[in-house]
Amino acid sequence: MPRVTMTTSPADQFLCFYCGEWRPQAESSDEHIVPECMGGSRNVTLTDRVCKECNGFMGKNVDAHLCRDWFIQRERSKLKIKNKGKQPPWFLSRLVWHRPEAVHVYVLPAGTWLFRITGTPDGQPRMMIRVHSPDPAEADEARRTWARDFSDCRVLPDPAGMSDYEVALLSDFKATTSAQMEFRFEIKLDAWNRGLAKIGLGLACLTFGNEYVLTEEANMLRAFARENDAIKRQTIPLRGTGGYAWDAEPRITQLWEVGEGQHLLLLLAVGSGVLFVWNIFGQWETTVAVALTDKFNDRLADNLGLAWLVDARAKKTTGPMSPARLPLKGAGK
Image 1 (tube, rainbow, N blue to C red):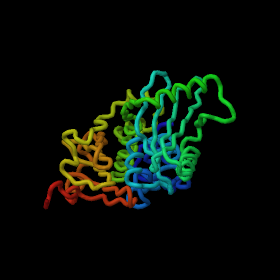
Image 2: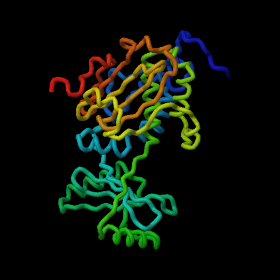
Image 3: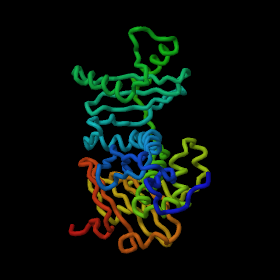
């Protein structure tokens, strides 16, 4: 069926941000454009212009992976930011050893280490838990975290018995961790890039309305966010940059101050287009083009841009506002 191109709403229907289709009002649902785990609150970036099907898809395939990103979980742990009453384990890095299986290391706030092993022959992850204190409360916390976040893992050693493979795996693990351990620091940008496309699309649709929802740029962003095949995603020609380090140049936050535990989200007029920029916890920055012509520039404050500040700890979003209202870095100091 060809896409309906009208921008005025039919009776009792709305245009879904994430699929670009007209939907009955009964199919609308409340969507956090900025996920709750990042500090998105039920105020500025909440919308009902998303259908239930898209809301469920984005929550499972985009938001969940973004919220489990090592950097976001680490910063939440450091700042004691909870989501739904739970504080995440702190992902440390990947353990280097001679076997082909991957060992990812997590540290709980109390100091307990969790080692999650993937790439096993049967596909089931294994986990080793190392408690560095005799305090029974720490052991209980480790078990609760395993049950909550790593219930797909089989914990070794298992007093009920282990296979020959598990005995060898555990023996090699003990030998590796009894010596000086070597870690490899890894960053996986895939979850970030899908999150960037989804949040940028949502804020652009929220700002520019139905006319933007039906643009080719919006179609490209939603195609990227909705594509579960990583190889196919690479063929979608999004324009932008990913994963700037905290000391990379240039960066938006070299101009504007971002407080501890805050994210800065912006729609900026750049040349004849509009960029979406996010800076996470004032340290990592990513951009993507959301419009390639100046058609929407006049809807931005002072034809310059719109900014949102997300306080992750307070779960409060301020904005949209002109970037001119943001505190300049170094001003008054």
